[in-house]
Amino acid sequence: MGKIGQDLELQAMWTEACTGLRDRIGRNNFVTWIEPLQLRGVTDGVLRFSVPTRFLGDWVVRHFAEAIVQECVRAGAQVTRLDVALARPRTDADGAPMARATPAPRAGTGDGPGAQVDIGPDTPPEAEADLPSGPLDPRFTFDNFVVGKPNELAHAAARRVAEGGAITFNPLFLYGGVGLGKTHLMHAIAWELRRQQPGLRVLYVSAEQFMYRFVDALRNKQIMDFKQLFRSVDVLMVDDVQFIAGKESTQEEFFHTFNALVDQRKQIVISADRAPGEIKDLEDRITSRLQWGLVVDLHPTDYELRLGILQTKLEAFRAQDPNVVVAPDVLEFLAHKITTNVRVLEGALTRLHAFASLVGREITLELAQDCLADILRVSERRVTIEEIQRKVAEHYNIRLSDMIGPKRVRTLARPRQVAMYLSKELTAKSLPDIGRRFGGRDHTTIIHGVRKVEELVAADPQLAEDLRLLRRLLSS
Image (cartoon, rainbow, N blue to C red):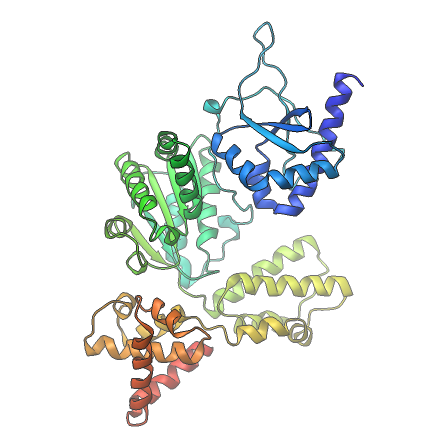
């Protein structure tokens, strides 16, 4: 077989292996770690790849080497291990660029064994146009974000940052519970900045990725490369920053990276599941820096916002299938019943749509109750401690940070005990778990608070009425 035939056979093998890898490790992992690989060939049973960065190569070897070899064997290759090396520009005798090796087919393009793969010149690492950013979900744009009262300030602030003009607040800190739209807004900012200013260096990473890259740089004595990467960006976006809490060395590097970017007047966007002052084991100096700019809370969704989200989702389904029929009361029913998590809410409608399409039935209220019995049963009991804390704080007109904080004055202690009591009654969390959500208090403190409320409620009609009202608010 000639050289061209061998290259085509190698390309077909790698394309087939990539199809298996996408299914095996998931699309996000495939896009982040496998797509950048360039397959250079097979020699003596060794798969040889070039990689754009040493970090990516080390990560692939540690976490995906076995899966890559196994999928290549399934695709017909006689290989036992892989080898990676940094990409270098290759030239012929006249100095002209030579063809590069076969890259991994891009996810989501319908690649199969016969897919076409672009061939072009090698690009040296220092000439890379794209940062090693985390994958962005194409669904998470501003066009697909439903705005309501609970999230309108966060949306407006995110829009302002995405305009890319003069920095008005730095950092923008977005926080809220699971499924309220933090990551959606983060991705939307990144997409919009890239659309408006393609040359802008926008780096989006999770706090976990920041930590892994930092640890990897320390181990491989590449800390200057790490610093150069994170301090050369125009916009740094770090998702779920609470995960660096308690990691001393990572916090130290994050602190210096933050300061360096602010000094250069570069934009920083951060997200977390709670306000900066409520993240346990986060250094005070980092907490202070995170509070410099605009701190915005994404509140739990209200009925109107949940209904709007469902209507938007249904419009997307109808754009693909105009024959979708949904009874008018179904969306209202779902918006009333599934209150804690937008992802669960959208997932419920997706399940209904799939079921109705497969069996050819109209989506009625009766069908919804039958098809979604498990989700509805869980949702009826899914009151979170964070939601209880917010409702109690609003009811007694105190700040959420004071309820969780150390102050013991009566005006704060009683609402705190009420929130502890309701957390014990309405959630399945253990006493230590509840204590951690109340500023790291010991479980004995929670027991004391619960018993205190139990003792007082029989003799205090106002407290009993407060509890009845709060239970009703939390169950609506």
